[in-house]
Image (cartoon, rainbow, N blue to C red; front, side, top):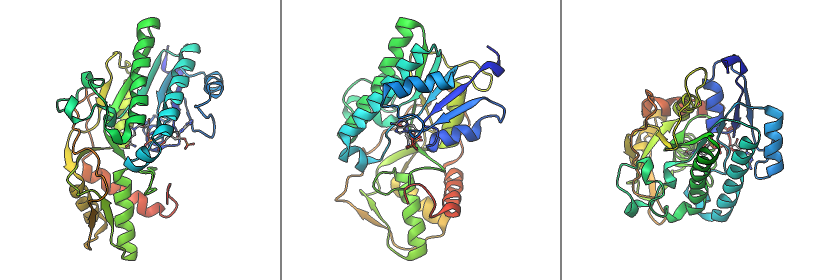
Amino acid sequence: MTKNEQRLLVTGGSGMVGQAVLRCLPDDYSVTAVSSKDYNLTDPTKARKMFRDVKPTKVIHLAARVGGVKANTDYVADFFNENILINTNVLMAAHKYNVQHVVSLLSTCVYPDAKWVNYPLTEAQLHNGPPHRSNFGYAYAKRMVEVQSRAYRQQHGRNYTSAVPNNIYGPHDNFDLEAGHVVPAVIRKIFEAKNNGAVPTFWGDGRALREFTHADDIAQCLLKMVGVPDGMPYESEIPCNIGTSEEITVKQLVGMVCDIFGYDGKVQWDTSKPGGQLRKPSSKGRIPHEYKSLYAGLKETCEWFALNYPNVRGV
Ligand code: NDP
């Protein structure tokens, strides 16, 4: 099939990673990006309708119920139900409508908890033990995408595979303090502290180590995995870690954002609140890619946030 006959479908197209995929695509590439407003993918009839309408040849499947530690804990059953339905419906409909290439997103937080794995986290360890209790609903649902993709590959020869990114940040993130992840929460709290003087408080003691990757880098890796615009798609039943493999503490992250916004006031740590797993370093992935430095990526994201505030998601 030539480049001109390819049609890319991006589920979760209104989200942070979906928007990054659109930014990173060549202007003339045929793409349809959809959100839950277009097709609620927990409903199998909507998932099938999406494939009939769009007629994709390749899919980057990003749609998911996504959130930070608090949302994952408070709504653990919802995270399980919605994600298992979305993923099952999307892969079943992709096969029904004869789509050969689908890359779905997992997350390093779906890997087994510390006592079941050796660091760095390698793809082969994905099913070695239970995930961390704080997000087991999301984690088991996401792991099943890998199982379902492998099953379609084995039974029907489909090139359905998955990528495993670590913490992603960037423009169009969710800056809701209850539902969002650590980077958007830190950006929002420091920005608001600088502007109204309230002392920012963060969960845990700041010692937790994390790897952070800009959404544009994740988008570029995913495009390489589906062979867009014109490369060979990634063909393997083994999922693929993507993202930087540089760990920093949450305290260092806060320090960088303070520096970027020029905030030199007080910062508080609430140790009565969970800080999540102490660390979950991932192995270097097999997709060759030169990643942005964390400081440069954060600076760009902070500038985007300041420019768009308060008209940003979750504020
Ligand atoms: P966002 O929360 O920014 O976007 C989620 C997207 O999924 C939105 O487009 C949303 O549509 C869509 N969606 C949610 N529910 C449904 C539904 N029922 N039917 C159809 N679409 C739905 O997520 P991100 O861009 O941050 O994440 C993209 C992917 O990356 C997800 O699969 C996530 O699990 C994974 N990931 C994210 C990480 C992160 O740090 N953010 C880390 C690792 C993995 P709408 O706008 O209409 O709500």
